[in-house]
Length: 526
Ligand code: AHR
Image (cartoon, rainbow, N blue to C red; front, side, top):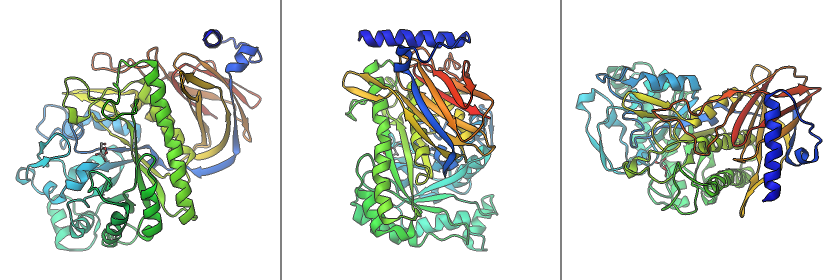
């Protein structure tokens, strides 16, 4: 403990000195023990980082769609065609690449015909998964695709396998994508959209092991083949077809799907939620937590690396040409329900801890860029690890939003090989690497580095050797705060926001900077 305090003092001195522009000698023994080192091989390019790994998920759940996205044309909340203007503006700024809709568990009870045609005539259905509340079906296919286009995102539609039919699913895809004069496309035109839409991804069911029908992987594999067979679209316009896969450390779904059904699929999905504790009945609160829950949350989220690696190893065995990608189409934090709120609406506050979770996962997805081409954080607005929280006409951008915005330069960038040598951050029996890092060459030729300092108390000097590129200018942004559960609220919406990086020194191919305690740092080198 004494040693930790001593190191904390040195780190603090180091950080303070950096803000005044004087860098303490890195060779000082105590500083050296704290320092993380890295090599970025700018001349060793890896896979292209697909922009869809920064995707989002919007389900008919709680106040995610109704209120969060859709307020209706007659609302006093400013909107365009019923879609709230403030949310659209914030999401456009984020460059959301793709949105998955309408679920989740909701997808397997959603009948697309309920959500087309004149809104006043649409049926009111029951959302049995999420609170048993009526769904007015005002937000349907046309509204979703209008919303996606408005925010500049591509569309990922999740079909209904659980309670639908192969015909219903096939006709939904035809309705959206066909360019031939049929009754379905005439109906689409009457409903306001003569031209076909482009759908990037289409999934056959969701969590077939659970809310999607409690199936075995073998039964689902058969049903997947049957349903995928009828998912037809014009040449060149067929979406990538996603088979609903496993979760957590269960690889039996990937195994069954890749060995039995890989001809029809473009991707296998995977879900993993991060909870602070080990018990889903007592997950842990979103705010007001102690350091043991901070480190357990980060340790749990880092398991994403191991889960992806074990599934990818299986894919490599059956699909060495990498035709099938691994789609983490639900991920993020899930805490206990906020006291006083509807339990099944999954509304939770979002803190600096969530920003670190987001950045750690994005680093992991980037490292697996050759196989992970799609990921969707759960969820976009007002649900679980949201980008945005709303209250009536008010809107708050969460720390997670800021992390996603900082990672924008990684979209379409090329992963670079890195070596990282970091101390560990330990509390009690839990120990994690103190720093996570990822590097890429952006589409404009700059280098971008994303770093996370997981330690909530100790600032971490990092010395990075950049080999194979002569960079001359450094800039960046830092997201941190004094409290582990620092958050933006409707009263104080700017409490957590990125600030410009100061004190970084770039000299003779070496970049030195200090990562503040509990921070996300993104650096640009030109
Ligand atoms: O994101 C909330 C729910 O979590 C989704 O509906 C379901 O797929 C998962 O279990």
